[in-house]
Image (cartoon, rainbow, N blue to C red; front, side, top):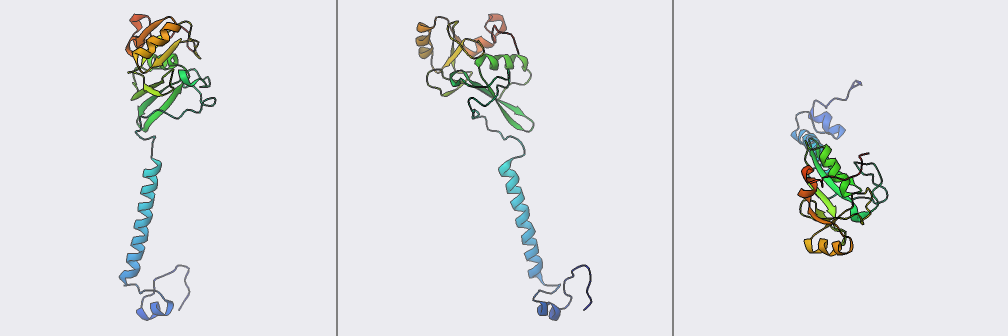
Length: 194
């Protein structure tokens, strides 16, 4: 046998058996090779599916590392959980989850990005800390509420809870739609943008 720089399949059954390999015409070797490539391809597809090419389509609230996560609007650190808000923005590569340190930052973000409405928006219940749908929450705006970016807004799951806070913090009880309407004078905040 001559030595070549490339490995070749033994051409005869006797040579293959001598080397402990199947011969060139053997289907066992070919099927094992095909199985190996099929397993490799399947593994790569599973890895891509598990990691995802984008950010997926999960519209649940983001996990916020309070004291570390930056507000996507004003760039301040999100540190006060009762006033934090979030949005899930649908994009070509999936869903982008963004955090805000104040309901007012969410409102300002929505005003400036009206061409791309979020798939979901969230606020924290002021009393329980539970994530709520921003559209379904009830809000209290009171000058006596000191919020991170001076929106003076606190969110509640029920109107009764909002009315209870309003007894201690005089102000208005509002819906999210009322907060978003520029004509009502309630949209966004009275503070200046960053």
